[in-house]
Length: 553
Image 1 (cartoon, rainbow, N blue to C red):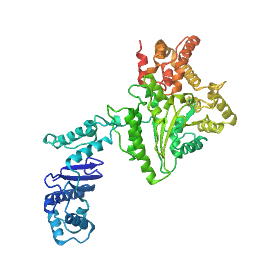
Image 2: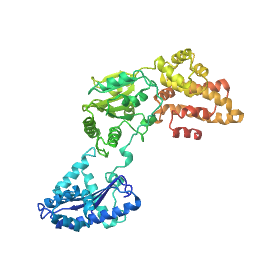
Image 3: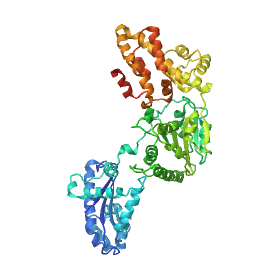
């Protein structure tokens, strides 16, 4: 008597949170004739049989999921039947004749009958078959970016196949079945996950509070937070949510992706990647409908669905707290536009997003390097906010996290030599050694990010050369000499490499590595170890690029 069972949480009955058993009845001859009790006898009897079997099994397993038994029809349900079931569930007196029928159909009495009636739902007057087809089309379209007329048909065919005898061994329909019918998979639902490291010990910035207040007060104006390389834009992006009003939500989208943004398999600048990722993260928070990408949808299709879902999400948030905001944070937004231009595309998603009319209660925050703000082509009303370098107190906190006994003079010197740049400071501290050694390596003049990388690499080369030994040096020299042979090729084709940081890419393009390696050869007559080189190169390249180096001819 059960046409369909819906399992929520898990396909296993013992682990499911809700199981809904459904019987469907459609009538074309008498669509307006109410269902009498006698017409529902077999349905109620079948439901009760299943209900009692589950109760018996739960005694052994100790686990009983929430149950629902649902009868659905386009015909109305007799008022006498619905009143009898509702009153029995509430423990209210039921007409003797109607009560007798329920007890006979179910084989239950008293409290047990009341418990069963609580999970029995009788729904009549559902839409007719043709209307149901139209509703299916409308419902499916809510989850797709474009009007895919084939999608409802594919879902209908999926259900038909599972209802046939050929699927008797596996009649269930799961998430992957639905996605495949819609020509998608789970990977396409979350095509560009955030790879920004969440630092639990990040140095709080003095500017942080003022910048977030400005974001909150920005209204419908898009916000562009800009700074030079290494100032801490990504870390600030991870902390914006901390200062939003109570009840707010945020999504952080990572355009850089540890350098994968320039890889064909890791693009993050397209509308179908960025907007789908953001939407489905919101859907994961039950704030809006899921969005399933399709092969034919264009940028405008994705933008329309994106704006609609922003409206859904902020409406739900503000229903609970009128001051709540939905904040969409786009880190390394300039890299998205750069990636688009490199493959001949005029606009990344961020350019279009910054010019959209955003719903009230939504904040769009894009972060980029100061000299690349024009890459975003922001509208005239955009609000620019600059994230500044560390002040002395922030440098002191950073240095004393590694060296608690650092003197005031040490702090002044570290602040000056690092050019107040958090990334330069982090790179210097990551090399280990004493504080005096770190200051000596940074000096004698203030250091840029690119120079800091080169100095640390040179120091690693010198250290590994000293530790290699005579035999090891010969092997290491061979490896690095091969690297030098391909350095010009890598220089010419560096767009095909994935960089962990933009500063590393700039440093490579400046040929610092090549110059330093050649300098080492001239001054020592030998090459240092591949291990030393790899120590810093693996921060710049994806592992596959590094693994290729020993095999080069």
